[in-house]
Amino acid sequence: MTIDLTIIWAFIIAFAVFAYVVMDGFDLGIGIIFPALGRGAERDKAMNSVAPVWDGNETWLVLGGGGLLAAFPLAYAIILPAIYPPIIAMLLGLVLRGVAFEGRWRDPNHQPFWDFAFTAGSFVAAFAQGVTLGALLQGVEVDRRAYAGGWLDWLSAYSVLTGIGTVIGYGLLGSTWLIMKTEGPVQDHAFRMSWKLFPATLIALGAVSLYTPFLEAEYFARWFTFPSVLFSAQVPLLVAVIAFLLFRSLRLRHDYAPFLLTLGLFLLGMIGLGISMFPYVVPDEVTIWDAATHPSSQAFMLVGTLFIVPLIIGYTAWAYWVFRGKVGDEGYH
Image (cartoon, rainbow, N blue to C red; front, side, top):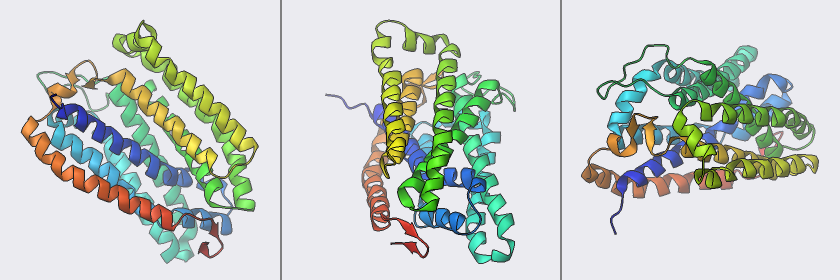
């Protein structure tokens, strides 16, 4: 049996992207909802809840971007010029968020400024990530294996919609993270925010899901024609099931279920993205096999990846296990 290394590398990059969304989404979400938190103890507890883990989350972003360059160089060469502005905005937002995170503790005399910078950086990074996704889904103009579009082709009603949806979804991740990690008045506030962000997330997810099939004829065929619809229809059904369970867990004030179920919504969104795009990495232009590097290069990189990825998963799991409790006035307990 022949092993298709291209499929394996596509899965590795998809896994890295999802891991980044899981692990950086909630702390970006904390920044997005930060203005709604009370000054002082509430904001301090929110920051303390992510302090032990936030700065390792971008590891997965590096793995996804580096993997795309190494395993699918043609896709990297076409996609990056098409989305330079949102990518630059995202990186600047992440830098601002990181500086503000440290500055808030080290320069308490200017804490309101650092709080604003933390929120601004989180919002810009989240919005830029959503816009980047929308720009990729709506398609990239290619001519002779090179990007042939303009500087602002990424900007459209659809990409703005995906950007807004990402901000709202990350906000829900942040509020459900606080439900899981805090107690008392802070947790009560997180429940109230989750009740507002939960329906907003469903509306945004529904709007993007209804818009996407009409971007490309092939997207429409995969979602609405037989026999593809037999598989694709399971995604909205599962979204409905998870939405019901999330509603129930919020009503019953569960600690862990709201966050885990919100991650489930993001996972289904990722699966929906795969249904729409696969096997294209540049919609209707370049497949993963067209963009892939030589199999010998893929095999060489895979050897290192099989050692590095379990190591990253291991130390990440250990960090989350060590800081698995609730956050009190003096930190984790």
